[in-house]
Length: 179
Image (cartoon, rainbow, N blue to C red; front, side):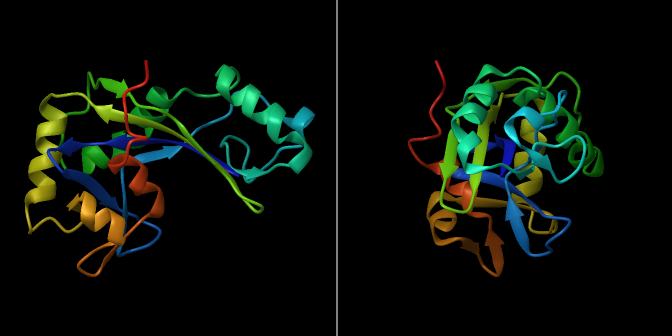
């Protein structure tokens, strides 16, 4: 089980993807796993570490977990997570990271027999950081960022680069603004 905030940086039909430090050659939208501010032992949640919303959850607790998650209490919100997660990415490329603004999109929950994943999606609002990330992603000399079309995302590849499966949500009707 994992819950994360994911950022869409888009221009027209293209979105910016960042290479994974843990998986060279794999690209995903910028983002990070949400942090917990209270334990979830009452739900039987066993965290992979002490502070992130990643771990295992008994099937009987899924409904209660979803209610807790949707309440937003006891956890970092998506915008906080993105600011934290983006600090390193932005600094690495010399992108100004202060005063970032986000527009919330519709969330998505995936639940299969083996995994529960929750995503909070956001658009990066227009500004210097967005402009710089778009320019870097379009620059073929910058290998840790790339710009992908919706067709490339659907195919799961840009050349030899593999695109993370959850990226598809940013190019579909799910990626509509929350009301």
